[in-house]
Every structure is written in structure tokens, then in C-alpha cells.
Length: 469
Image (cartoon, rainbow, N blue to C red; front, side, top):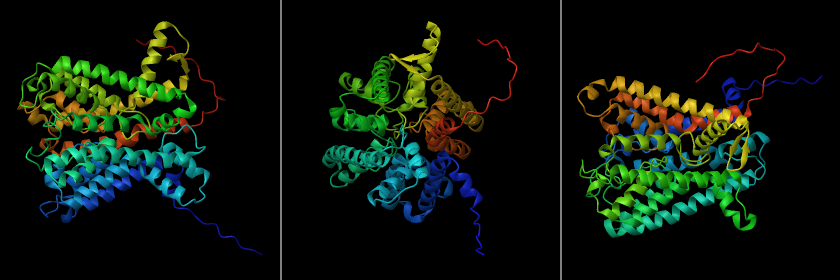
């Protein structure tokens, strides 16, 4: 008689593997914790003394979630080892650990399970898992190619300014920019800590290269794969058409609006109104691009008018495209909601968008993601207004600045009008989960809704009539 021993799987692993979204979320959390542990080491700090776990955890979360909010200037506060840990976290966070793992499996030609293929498809925001590993190889190739080209251009300009160390700064920033992280190494130069790109408005190569890297990273890998296939297909998928069109519209309208709001603003040294006329349009374009989850800034964010702060907050909340290195609720979510409202106003029974019908389930999912994002944004801001009540009463910054900060964290942007290092540690503890949820929350929530099976309709409930509006 044969005896079969039944193995018991770990309940935690069983719970994680039940849904791909949980594995994706857990992988980001694991990378953050490993990164925080490395950044806590004295060797990671330029001074040789550990910054402590909270500051390391904030930095690791911001890097892994490709945000860019910093409580310590990257160039002056961290050692070369610390900088390499940060850029490694940015690269892993931009691609996603599932995508990276799948890439190496595809190179080794290892057989993978159907569950692994589904997980990879969800991680890359693909429409299916047919040819998914070919897409993964494309994603890695596209990422490295664009980072290399952008980094080379930046290295060329920085070499002229900073010498050989400028090459390191350029390629480092190329990775950070394409991954929409917003970290830079300019602070240890003559421009001072936390200066970002405010001294480079007169250098169109640096501003345009950085801005285009941000846009390219925010389009999404599925869109890039579609663009590369266009010479053979001669037609872009509907998703790609929507992403490209809405991205162009938001950048164009944002550029016009920021110029209108800021061209006469001379309230601070690095306000837009103090720039020459030709540089103001370039600064307006960059200010329109950077809220799309980037984090670099070429003008002082604290000096922005209230109109510009509100517009920047809206753009940060909308974010980039699905499957990209950016955050926010995603431009497709925003577009579907607007299209549904417009269709309802016109009396259409279906959601019509650019002469295509969008399934009602897509709108329901978009509305749920919008509601989740708005809840995170408002609840986080409310907590921060409480923790920063003393600074608010003293006029150090305004509630609008805290809403701006929270939108920057949730949208994984990295812009700050209040000055993140000046906030209390309690506010840091609010921003950390906001960055994490902004990177994995909406995506995981959307995946969960997409994979959830409809419940049976055996039970019939009475119709409840309620007035809305």
C-alpha cells in the first residue's frame, strides 16, 4: 500500500499567490524594505553616520515608487554607495520586479506556468499573455535604449559643466528621468542642495532631453511596443491612440495655462517671471510635463501662483499612462470618466470615445480607481493639516501646499511646494504609504476588479429608488 504524504503550503504564500495583484504589491514592499535596510547603513551616508531607519525608509519608498520626494538631498547627503542603491531601486521600481524576473526567465528559456504568464501580463498592463515574454524583452530593450540615449545627451552637457563627474551625473539622471523618478545629483555643484534643474532654463538640451525622457517613460510599455510595430501594422491600437492624443492635449493645454499664470510672476528669485521671454515658454512646457509623475522642476514650486499650484495638483492626480513608470489614476481612467459624462449629457446609452464604444464595466472600474485615488488624496491631506497645524498657523505654508504635497506623493511625482524636509516626521509617515499606494494601489485595485468574477444572481433584491444630483 502506497502512502501519499500531503504537503501543506504556507498560508501566507497561498494568500499571496491567490491574486497577481497581491504578488505585485508584495514585491514592491519587499524591495522597499531591502532598500531601506541598505540605506540605513553608515556606508550609504556621505557623512559616514547612519541617517536612521525613517529617513532611509522614506528615501527607499520614494525611489522604488519612482516618486522623487526627498528629505535628504541626494547628491550631498548620500555616498556613492547610497546613490547606487537609490538608482538601483529606481530602475527596479520603474520596470517592476515581476518584469525583471520574467525577463531573465525568458533569456534562460525556462518553462513557466500559466500563473506566471498571467502575473507577468498584469505587471506589464498587457491585454493578454500571448507572446508576453517577447513583450517583456521589448520592455527591457526599450528602457535601456532610451535611458542610454538620454543619458548620453545629458552626460555630454554635464561634462562641459562639471568635468568627468558630469558623465556619471548624466547617465544617472537619464535612468531617473525615464523612470519618472525625479532624483538628481545636481545638489553637490555650485547650485546648492535641492536645486534640481532651476538653473538650466537657458540650456534647452538639458531641459528638452529631461522632459522628453519623462514623456517617453510616461507613455507605457504597451504603447511603445505598438509604436515600434507601426511600420508593419500601419495602425496603432485604440489604447495607444488615446494615450498619445490625450498626453499631447494635456501637455499643450498645460503649457499655455502655466505661461498665462506665471509669466508675470516675480515673487521669488527662481519664479518664471524673472526668466527671459524665450525661456519662459520652455519653462512653461517643462512645468506642464513634470507633473506627469516626473519630479524635476525648472522653476521654484513654492513661488507658483495658487492657480498654477491647483493645476499642477490636478495634473499630478491624473498621472501618466497604464503600464508606464508613472503614477496617478492614469490618463485613460480620466479620459473614460470624461467620455462617460459627455455621453450621458448627450443622451447616449453607451460610453463613446473617439468613435469607439467603451464597455460600461470599464467606466465602473475607472470610477472605482478615481474614488480610491481621491480618498487617499483627501484623507492624507487632512492628516497632514493636523500634523502641520503649528506651521500653518505661522504661515510657513498653506493648506494648498499640503494638498500639493500629498498629490505629489500619490501621483509619484516628487514636486514639493512646502519643502518635504521641513515637514514633521508624522507627515513623512503619511507620505510613505501614499507613495506606495500611488505606485501599486490603483493598479492592484484595477487588476482585482478586472479578475473578479461576477457573482451569481440567484438572489433577487428589490429595486431601491434614490434621488441623485
